[in-house]
View 1 (cartoon, rainbow, N blue to C red):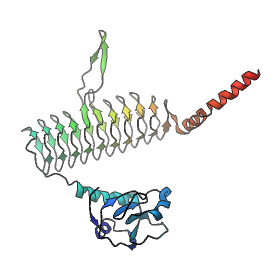
View 2 (cartoon, rainbow, N blue to C red):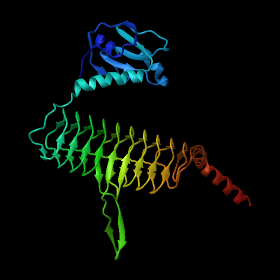
View 3 (cartoon, one colour):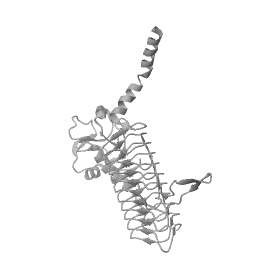
View 4 (cartoon, rainbow, N blue to C red):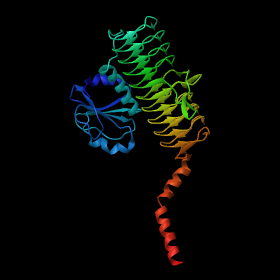
Length: 343
C-alpha cells in the first residue's frame, strides 16, 4: 500500500474522534494489523479478543472504541471513536478515491459503441469494450476495460462494471450496481431434455434483472431465465464464484458467500444469508431471514428465520450435537467390541 495522509486530514475523515497522545511524524503511509504495524502505520481494534495487542503495537495511530482504557506510547496517538471498524472503512473509502480515481468520462478510442446505443452524461467506456445496439447506459456509469454489453441491455446510474464483465443481451442492471471482474450476467441456463437417446438443449429466451445497490463478485455467473427473468433483489451482495441458475429469484438484502450453487427456479425471500459452498436443489423456497451455514446441502423448502447446517441440512443446534457425537463413535465402537468379547 502506497499513500500519504496527514494527521489533520485523518481527523477531518473522523470528526468525532477523541485524540489521546501526540505524534511527531507529519504524515501516515500505511494500514496494518496491530501486531505487524510499524511507525507511520494506522491500525485499529475491531475485535475485543485482540485487546492485549494494543499496548504492544508500534502503530503511529490506533483507532479504538471509546470505552478502551489505556494510554498511548510516546509518539503514538489513540483515536477513540464509536466504531473503529466503521472508522477504518471511512478512511479506506477516502483512500480508494485517492489511489484508484475513476476514469475520465470518455469513450476509449479502441472501444466499439454501436451507433444506436444511448449513453448518459459522464459515462466512461474503457479500452476494448463492446457496446451493442440499442444499449442504454445512464449517467455516471463506468464500463471497465474489455467489457461486453450485449444488444438491448440496460445499465442504470452510477453503475461500476470492472474489467472483463459480460452483460449479455437484454439484461438489466439498476442504479449503483457493482459487478466485479470476470462476472457473466445473462449466460444461457443449464437445461436439456432427454430425446432420442441424447440431451437436447432447451432454449433460454429470458433475461436477468439486477436491482439497485447490488454487488456481484468476480467470476460469478447468473443465468438468464427460460421465459421470464432471473432477478436479484435490491441491496443483495453476492460474493465471488457463485452460480445462480435460470429463473432464480433472490430477494432484497440477501448475502451469498463464495462458491454457492443455486439450481434453477429457487426463490430466496428477503435477508437470507448463505455461507460458502452451500448448494440448493431446484424449485425450492427459502424463507425470509433464513441462515444457511457453509457447505450445507438444501434439498427441501426452508422456513422463515431457520438456521440450517449440514448435508442434508438440519437445524443448526441438532447438526452441532450430531457433529460432536460423531467424534465419539470410535470410543463407542470400542466399548461394544469389549462387550462382544466378554459375551
